[in-house]
Each structure stands twice: as structure tokens, then as C-alpha cells.
Amino acid sequence: MAAAFVVVAPIVVGRATTAAAAPATTTPGGAAVTTVAEAAPTTVAAPSTTSTTVVAARCDPIAPTALLFVGTVVSRQPTIVRFHVDEVRIGPQLGDLEIDVSYVRDARFFDVGTRYLVTAAQDPDTNLYLSKVRTRRGEDPRCTAKDPIYSALANGTPIDTGVFSGLKGTRGKVVRAFLLPLAAVVGALFALVALKWLVIYVGRGVRRLVKGPVRS
Image (cartoon, rainbow, N blue to C red):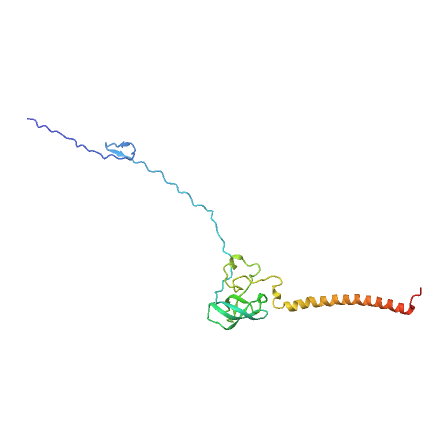
């Protein structure tokens, strides 16, 4: 009896994929090879070379606040103002004392007897307190806006720095200097006019006396 051999070919069930595959390629040995297509390279845009650069202002170093106080002016010199300290808000307690503050260009704007709010730095070499009223000519506003070292009136109002503000405290002298010479000139003119008319009237009187009474 002849033996019968039955060759059963195995059945392979493949998992379905959702990705699209490239067509299968058959090799000479009969095996199927599936080629997967390469993805297209991603193009990355080059960063923009345009940028906005803000140039910082060239400011002098800002001096720290050494003393903030409310004080009354006791005396004034060309560059130094002496205050009686009424109230200290920042710094050593110097209440009821007198201190000098240097104002290189602005001392003339202060009135003796007036109260001011003074923010001062301190010179490390002389220990003298320094402050100011005006900004320096040509100084960048971006620098001055950050500078706290200024003086103002006691209520925070800026100090008047007008053309005639430097004459404060000397109004009487200024009035006398202008009005007295003017009054002298006007008085001299009136005196001359009065003398002229006096001479005229006296001359007329003398002529009448010399000629005698007029006969009818």
C-alpha cells in the first residue's frame, strides 16, 4: 500500500495596516519585499535677521539718597544753603539741627524763612550734602527722570527758576536801585520846570514895578 503524504501549506493571516505601503517587489528567490517610501524632508524657515535694538541712554551713575528732609532756610550763600531741619524722612535723625547743603548753580533760588523738601546725596570726600533745583543743560531726559536728588517746596511744588527768581530776598534793594534814580531824574525835571516858571513870573513882576502903574 502506497503511503500518501499530504503537505499542508500553513496559512498566515497578516494584520491590516492603515498606512499606505509601496508595491511589493519580488526577489529572485521568490520572497516578497515591501518597500516603504521615505517621508519628504521638512523644510525649516531660516530665522529673520531683522531685530529692534534699543540703545540705552548714557547716564551718569545715580547717587544714592543720603538724606531726605523738610527744612527751613536759615541763610544763603552763593553756593551753600543752610537749613534748619524740621522733619527727617530718610537718613540720620537730625531734627532741630542746622545743616548746610551745596547747590553749585541753584542757591539763589531759595528764600530765607521758606520751607523746602530736600533730597540730598553725600560727597564721599567732603561728607557735604549735595542737591540741585535744575537739570544740567543738554542732559538726557531719560537720565533725569530717574534721578531723585532734587529740591522742591515743602508741598512738592517745583521751585521757581524764572529770570527774576534770583532776586528773591533782595526786592527792597532792587526797588531802590531802579526807582531812586528814576525819582531823582523826574524830580530834577519838575524842579527845572518850576524854576523856569518862577523866573518868568518874577521877571514880569519886576518889569511892572520898574515901569510903574499904567496910566489911563
